[in-house]
Image (cartoon, rainbow over all chains, first blue to last red; front, side):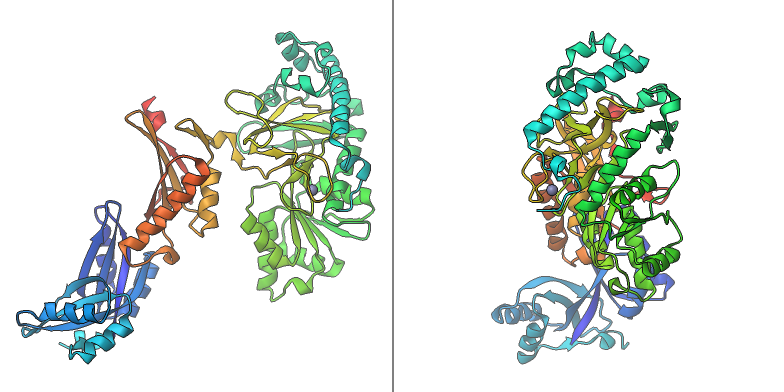
Length: 143
Length: 435
Ligand SMILES: [Zn+2]
């Protein structure tokens, strides 16, 4: 139930982000979710793409330092309190969230959030036991 | 205890060494004063005559000799014997400037052979050994030094010289070489080539290696030892003083014993010229006390090191010097502290960081700042800001405990550090722009 996220080390300088997106575009790789964590010196660009392996090869060739991290793509029904519910489920299950960000879903009846947690396997169990729906990599691109 | 080539000298009590050095220094100063007008002039400028030098305690009174003095007197201005008595010349080009030339009498060559034989015995060598010399033979002193030592010892010298690595391996295997002498980087390359040929340590008879003439790390030593299945030893020397084997490593592998019956070593502050006590880091300075043809007094090597007379488990009593830790030319003075880029590089290498780094020194509000930029490698990258910051912080702590001053570490993207001719520019001192 895990989704492959690509985290890329980028320097906090003009044009650094563009270099990454240019490489992906040149290899016809689609981005579906993106989050940037940054400090004064550097940033970590986190991406969910349609073909993580192809992206990895392209990034290696272009000389980027990156890592592939398993993350959870959690489906969040489009109704009040649903995000809060998921946070409760994780907290009750003793799962620490490293970070979370939104996924650009093309569906109107639900949203999708990416969660990076300390123990992804356990988090999957906890979420499924509480009836929370998870999306798989290929599902994210079904449309 | 190690076996020694000349135990009566190599394990001489320290007091006797000092006495011997004093006698020889007095004689040498008289020889130099009488036969080298350049030195006589330098001494007279300081109001000195040989009568002022009574022993090692007066050494500090003598003028230093610098590389520039050698250039100014090129080619034969510092020779102390008539050319008829010179039986060999060697030269060193240096990376910048004019070459220098040195000469040897037969007696000088005999001493060189003797100290090279000491090195060979210190690594376990004997007359049964096959000494494979892959240093270059020619004007460079590398090849001839250990070659002569091997013959003196009664071992078999194999003058392979450098280059053609496959042929080196053929000779290693067919001739049964047991001791390899070359630069450490070439030893590592021979090891790799051996591996690429599908061979390993079991296919050769090597047991020890004597590697010098360039800087190398402990990591490199372990790597060479594993690849070739040998013990790897360090050796130090320079053409100006003799050539390889001015100092030699023993079984302890923790520094090199200086052949104190022939050379006096001092460590000085490169800025002030003041002699530093044992254990302090500074510029290594050598005085030749037995050399006839080219006897330098207080020669400033520009190599940075530490000397120590702590007893060595090998039994030798000669003072030990550390592996050179850098060059005075590279020294930075940051907030009053001497910092060598090689120290910073050492911290990075120990922790598996890239050799592509850059040290930036600046002056902000009248205070020196030290920033170290290091290109991140995939192994050091975790996908959280916290992880990357923790890696930076760990390096900062290590640098602070080593240098005694604060350095700010920045992990940066691969290939982002400016390069000149393929190599990263190591040091940028922006303070000079403000002067
Ligand atoms: Zn020793």
